[in-house]
Length: 426
Image (tube, rainbow, N blue to C red; front, top):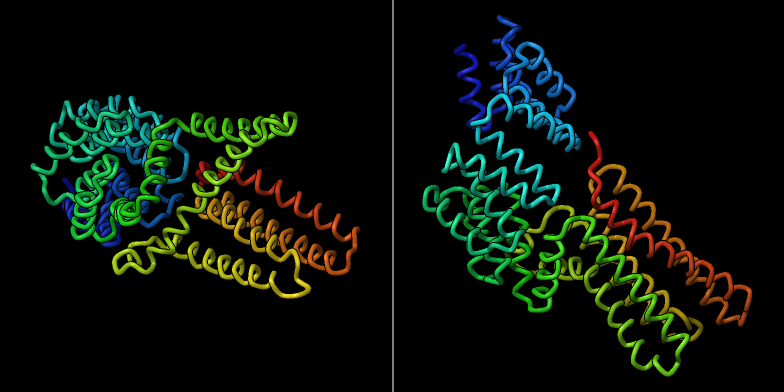
């Protein structure tokens, strides 16, 4: 093998991708027809998020050697990074066809299945890779992750334990063990594995997210919420949306039943209030407990940058709501308590905004959130003025703005869920 390619491989293993890129470019200057060098260069460029250049190198490698499986695998990685899961699947399927015994290709296919919530297919792909390399760390981890989603936690635990016995310093395996324990409500041992994963690899975001969830799960209230979210995460996306939509339709039906049958209202309305309380809790639990975690000596360093920004804004909304609530006791500010409630309600679209991927989905939700804030401020101001002046026209205008605010909340609950699942193309 070309000595410069050998040096590039060594540098890539050390994470020095820029230095590896220089070696590969020198090799290609001497011989532009080295398909493997083009494939490796695509990997280096992908690390630097130079997607166009990475794709061009992977396609150049395929053009030089159409039957080279690694070139198709690299193209699959580029397509996935760009948000084209279907094209990534086609490319890795071709890599598997050309190199059926490569466990890396099988593991990548399992990742695509897993991200598409196809748990059984992810399990099959991971197990196919293990047939050729029983000790393959990524295939073992993906097998365990799929087993957890399928409810086979005991098998998942055995798989991870065996992987840890073979490779006790694998950060991802420790993180996976932590998530498996968290699924089984074993918070304390889960924390230990997340800490060990971060000690071995401080940049492991999978372990960092697990550590944050485990710290919050020590609170029994958040523990209930986490169990609900983990259960929802096991459902296919269509089923998740179905659960949310069914709850919304069912609650509307109950409200209609209470309105048409006043004698049933004392029994039905508490159920609708409980539904709204549950929905509010599922939306507000994350920002509330993330805000509380900011006071924890470990938690404040583990919170992701996005969550840190969200909690800062949420704290501002909370303070504003409390200020408006206090103002409602002052003469001439009747109705300010409604403004306080709507201010706190803005935490819902705010949370969805940060659940959306950076790019156009997040910008859409930012626009919706700002529009709702404007409607809330305008409607609340008109209402306070209308109450003070006993102006019926202004009161009616404020109610229109509040109704539009309600439509924004409905969009957040349904459309926001869809936006949060969108991966922008890059």
